[in-house]
Amino acid sequence: MKLVVVSAGLSVPSSTRLLGDRLAAAAAARTGADIEVVELRDLAVEIAHNFTNGFAGTKLAAAQRAVTEADGLIVVTPVFSASYSGLFKSFFDVLEPDALAGKPVLIAATGGTARHSLVLEHALRPLFAYLKAVVVPTGVYAASEDWGAEGLDGRIERAAGELAALAEGLGPARPAKDDFTVVPFAEQLAAISEAR
Image (cartoon, rainbow, N blue to C red; front, side):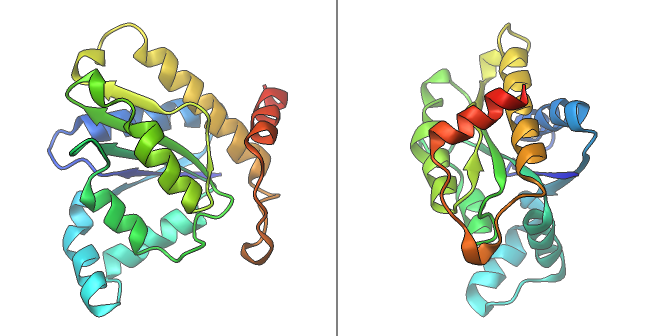
């Protein structure tokens, strides 16, 4: 099994990347999955070129392939203007339209204040629903005050467990792109409950 972390953090070190790494470690502990990290910061120029010339550069093509072939994704963005970053959205815009169809995705974000936590429900969840991904019920938001505070570890473990259950349950039985059907949210929750 292979899980891919897509991190849109811009700084080094990055709290966005740190959150992605912690989520990946928790999911891998449950599944034994191999983890690959796609740092969007390193692909910014190739993403922009893809918009202007229609061709993916070598690094961008490798990242697109990794995401498309993954059994599950962990996507993490910093919050900009109460939403995901432009770089984050641009990467998903240059994927093939059905690249994420039926793929389990754990959504996560980082920000300076807890006031932006609704970005998970108002920006990230609708984006990945539109892309036909299967979004795990628990998203993880980490504000500056969450690091080292009580509660973040529990959210990470819960979300990672849900991703692991979906990736293991949907991995071999994921529908082909041509016959994708929408799985009602209630059925997704039932599948996670049965996997526990």
